[in-house]
Length: 187
Image (cartoon, rainbow, N blue to C red):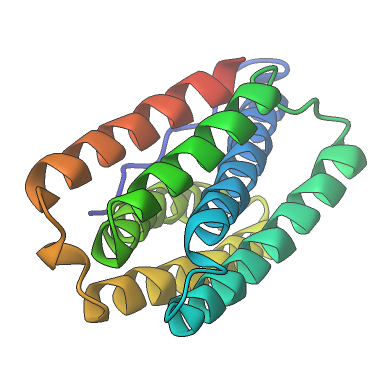
């Protein structure tokens, strides 16, 4: 699902305002993703017989940490404040990760699949929106989107769609992600 790009606002400061929203929400999303994986690793990381998934989660968390570091730098360079909800997204991400991991490996993978599916569409819209005015940022987002898609594909291969209550679990997580995106752009 590709999101339609949001056009830059006309008038003085419109472009700057939209760029701030993009950087703020992407920073918040990567922060949340890091904490989702931390929550999953807190549950599955040292559990007997879970070394394989623990390694997968650590690798995916590493990618998200790299994305977060990039957005930390971009926020500083562009003098953009992070979302006011940063502490909440840390706790919510960890809780989501731990909660799905407590439901089992397949539920943890279902969480990854749901989150990354929403993020793919979100990044696709931003890439289209930024391609002409911010080609370097669009290229970076393309790289991040491709890594997110690899996480999604891996989660599907690992049985995400076989998780107990998958349709409901996935729908709730996707709705939560979409809501978090809208809130984090503004606050």
